[in-house]
Length: 99
Image 1 (cartoon, one colour):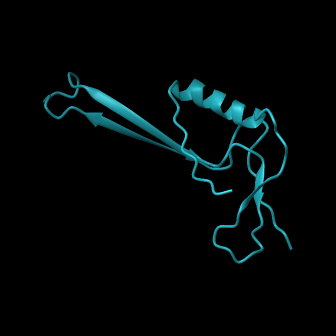
Image 2 (spheres, helix red, strand yellow):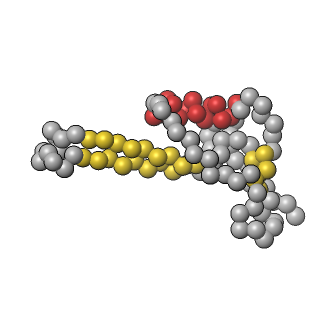
Image 3 (spheres, one colour):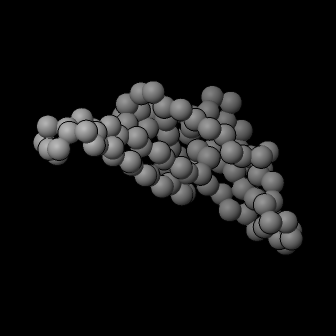
């Protein structure tokens, strides 16, 4: 029995996404209104592609299978366009997927 979980939507959305923001304040200034602030946003989420995993095996991390050919990476392009609209640039991508 092969069960599939397919992620990546036609509009560039992903199945799982978590956004974390750290806001830093310059502690040398005693006033919150006059201080210097910096913000760092980290977004983690599913791969913006059509993919699945065979979860019927007893492997803790089953390999990922790309389900649909997308030679122009249309779904990924939509996803990163949304990211640019939300956060601006630069966007740094770190690949944690083992294919």
